[in-house]
Length: 452
Image (cartoon, rainbow, N blue to C red; front, side):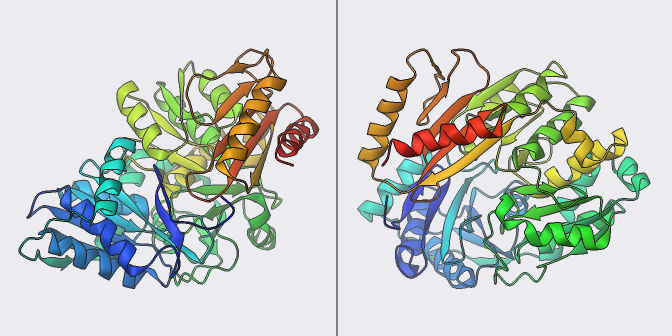
């Protein structure tokens, strides 16, 4: 894992532009995906704002057409917006050119099926096998069409405004700051905030893919947003990743509150209106489970990966779901993590309670979560997992297999450690949570020591 290979996982395909990800690689994956469909089927193409995206989208569209597919190009578009259009256009799938939160040198492909959901492991494996075999269908060239980008945004905004308590948000008269990091959120969020009557200060809002900072919305990358909140007297700040499927928060003092609290507060808002099952992943904070439990909502945990959450939400008829990386999913709006949905639900929670973001966070049980990244080989990861389980023989190991999540006391509670290979980067992720920041850090230190 020490190099930067082409990463193919349940979260899509990602690689370094011009190295592991080339026009040929994109075309071959598109041809493989098109081969799984029927000639004449419609496929949506969209991309985030990365400069390499336009040429990759052209390569994907050409390959799809050679398999006989009709291609509708949405141009630059958020990932959740593109997934909504798959269903709206009765398409059989989509290819979204994006590397989501990965740094600027990366790009990738997210593959979507007819119900607007990402391919699951089995479906993705079929496409990958065709990619390697080169067994692509050749058919009469399919058509290429475009779609009005303003109509895509309008549909997306309307679905969110219809779901949330828009009147309560308008009455609150919020002033907010938003950092879309030169990504597709800059095309969507201003329209949503305008529809909700929210006054917004935007920074890094030119959608040109020239990221002003590392695009992952983690606390280290929220310094500029925090300053914008303080300088403009805002109630809250929102940091959005390049394809607009994750959102992180800073409070009125400009301090980051942690990605997991986006989902925890969104769960409070959704469950207050209609209690029901909540789905999230092994890596998500206990704060999300506690937020659901306060409304008597059962919680189901899955392996990390949006499709795992969405498919479990379908089975359980969940009210809301998501991941602890700031990804919020409301199936009533669309089967996708959606930064704009998370933003709107957090504003609703604040508006209906009359509480600030800091007060909302303070009302939740206090946990400290520490997240690390380690570069290692698969063999080193396997050895570390075995050593970790050996150190804590009394721990309860969650039955969902995604690396290993150990509840150290033997009960389903903090402290816990989750060690797993990333779906999106050539790294291993270490996540530990405890009631104490010191203990969470020490647990991560302990796991890092297993790789020394």
